[in-house]
Length: 202
Image (cartoon, rainbow, N blue to C red):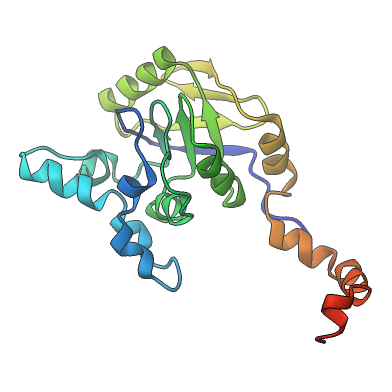
């Protein structure tokens, strides 16, 4: 038993300009009180959206042009700050299925792996090029090939980078740790029975 194989991600893009966009901005702390992650997607970037609206500006996550965005293109150190899993959960539940950025917080990246949201990296020029292309044609479908680590955009195939370990997990479904545990549940129980601090309280 393995998780879903993630070999391709297709859909429109959504551009998010700026470095060091942290998890507190992705999902404000007041929304962390939820018992489950249901509905958390609607609160993604809530404070940034409100702040820009007060200036008469529109945040990409509130812009009707990008309402169907599935591939997020960001900049440096995306997902920095606190380690809250709620941040990638809110992005995924909003509709994001893959992210391209110049770099990531390591913990944020790891949380994305466990949610089957591939995170690719590219240099500043490439990210800017993709952001400009999305803004020029928000409805255009982008297509990411996870195995080749490329994105097809505007008739061009652009090379990306991805951590090999994470890439392998998407391609064989091993990103789903729960599925792996259930697949080997018998062996896990056998080990547990040999552990005194488990058997003494069984």
